[in-house]
Length: 321
Image (tube, rainbow, N blue to C red; front, side, top):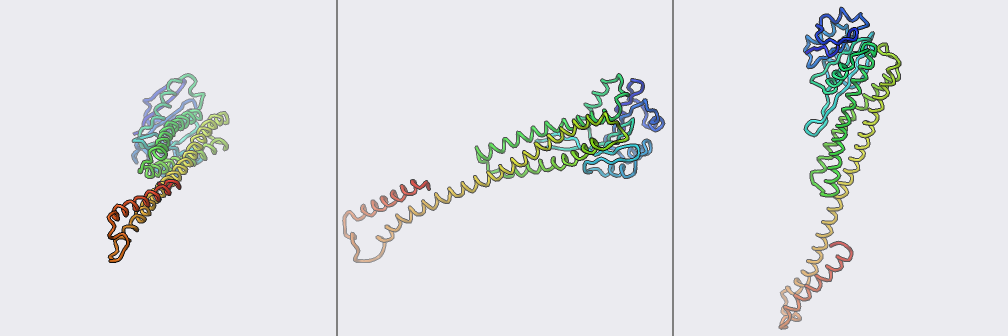
């Protein structure tokens, strides 16, 4: 579905411009267009290519989806692949956004509604005066900044999950902690695979001259670049923490196993020492000492108990029991 999120002309906002008229009005530099496409059909993509004259390679990347974050420079426009992110069912979920940016237009294509796009459109509609003079560069910055700002709540949710895992490992020693650690590491890796290329995208926008926006916009893109660096550093730190937590979990497991083995070994030695006495007096010989002794039974039981207690005290002293 194609909708006009923003159409500014002479400081007036419109949202009922027919899509078929866009190509006739793109030459008017005093107009600013933001066209948003949700769940595009092949017909929608073909219409965009006809109205804006987008390169076939850019349209192919848009149709195939699941592209790596990137920025491509074409004649007269930029093609940017970026990802929005939010937490759903306790896990980070991403939505690919394809941006086509020209001198006086922005086209966004995505598979589902994105809160950052809605918030950015509402914010720009409240800034009607001098909207045209601010240019498409600031609109792109506002959208990318809103997308990146939504990363921070996702990182906060991941932080809470890491803290719960640390408590499960060090306080309760939850047997399911290992599976949770691997699941969280997988989520962090998925986030990191997006943040790394997006950092490169912003680095290109900051350092390379663009025909779409002027140098005055670069400082705004630098702000988005700094935010992505903060999120990337946080993800890298949490990955290291999870690796440490996994090592700690394995160490605790090994220590608990060693303690169990020591306890079993000590118990076996105590029983073997007591069984030695019982086995000696259980031999079927006729001539044995104490066989006819009235206190022989009590003597054997007492001897077995004394040996058991002595060995028990020895193991307690060396911290095996």
